[in-house]
Image 1 (tube, rainbow, N blue to C red):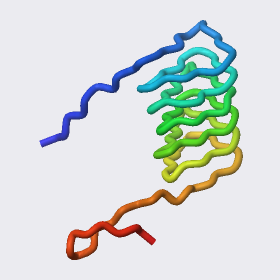
Image 2: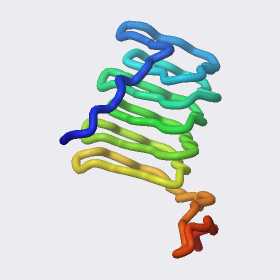
Image 3: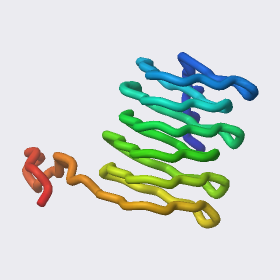
Length: 128
C-alpha cells in the first residue's frame, strides 16, 4: 500500500508577472513563481516554481528549486534542485539533491547535522 502524504500547506505566494524587492519572512511554506530580489530570512519550506526567478540570500529549512536562483542558500535540512532548476551561488545544507538535467554553478558545503543513531540497546547516541 502506498503512503499518502498530506498536501503541502502554502502560507504565501508570489505569482507570475509579480516582482518584489526586499526582505521576506514566513512561517510555513512559500512559493515563488514571479521575481524576488532581496533576502529570505526565515521559513519552513521554499518552492521556486519553473517561472520563478530569485536573486537573494536564502535561509530556510528546505528549498525545492524548479526555476532560477542566484545567491547564497542555507537550508537546515535539505536543498533540492530539480531537472529544470538553475542555481548560481553557494549552498550549505546537510542534504543536497541535484536531479539529472539541473544546472548548478558555485560552491557547496555539506554541514554535519547532529544525527542520532540507535545502538543495540535502543539508546540514542550521536553519529560519527
